[in-house]
Length: 119
Image 1 (cartoon, rainbow, N blue to C red):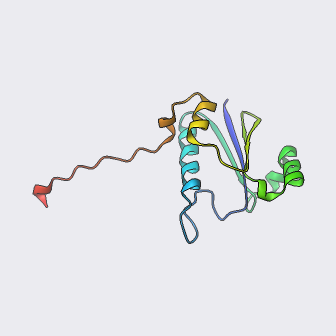
Image 2 (tube, rainbow, N blue to C red):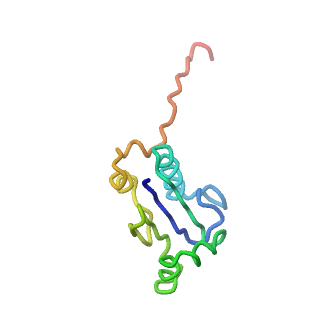
Image 3 (spheres, rainbow, N blue to C red):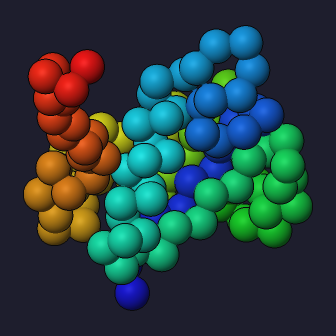
């Protein structure tokens, strides 16, 4: 099975919508991961603040933190192989890694039609 594992830095949530302002990059990543799951990809995401045990239990993540420090997160694995560190992959990079089209990772906004005659 295809998989992606992300070891995130410490943050209050991984969606980017909490706190005083919205982080569009975290929102993009959360949406892309949701779409990957819909396409059969196993998604595992660990936040250093909420899941410190996952960092300790994973030898590679633990060594990464010891060698490079928390400022080097996120650490991302695709299908068990290190894919990125220090930044989140773009939707294009994720699509390529999983054999998908980039538009499959973008949430499509519903088109609304407004009949001005009824207003």
